[in-house]
Image (tube, rainbow, N blue to C red):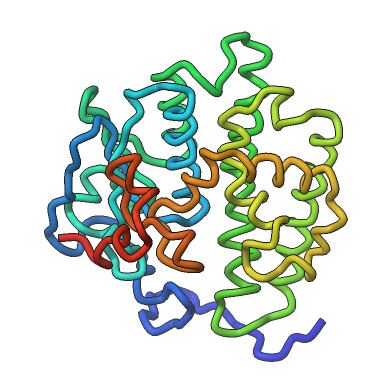
Length: 291
């Protein structure tokens, strides 16, 4: 392994705002709002503030799944948060999520703010009584996998994805380190899915809804352009699961919401009504910023 350009940490770290990388302009070592802005509010009980990254997809897929089984109370407005422009640091967003990360949910009926994608899935499952088993043993197994995802995905996104796809320079050690861990995770999922149709058992649940946007997209070739590098074709059971979930109509809808890249037919910048999915592409794209 090459040691060229070896970094020697200083005795006391200081913030270098010009450190580079895809997200350098919005990364910072302090919390709190950078500017005053009021979040928009739609007409539905659930107000989602997000962008269509994997964490954002989890929540809009969940909402669409609930609507698909007739839970009309899960109607929602999905407002676009342009994280590359720092919308997540507005005073309005920080009020909903002091951690300044998408997605964030505000339930106008209960007055509850809910942040962290796993917490939002759990909140919606508890509120509407779906996609989380009532039986304690089955429920525990689903929650095992929900928390597995919440702990594992940062190694895929912030670890592998960052150093393989987004870092300003490629270095052997971090790419090798996180590739090894991601492939271990893929093997964990593949072995589990050899025994069960879904994560947590034979019923579709919030464990699948949480995991698919990260690992499903990855093995179907929709993340980081790393399919060949990671040899995703070898994870047969995981790919079977990923494809089955991809074919669900609610997943196809939910993954489009707040998405601002890729094919125009796969983008719905904001969603305020079910009919928004039926509009022509040029009519359904929202402005790039929020007021």
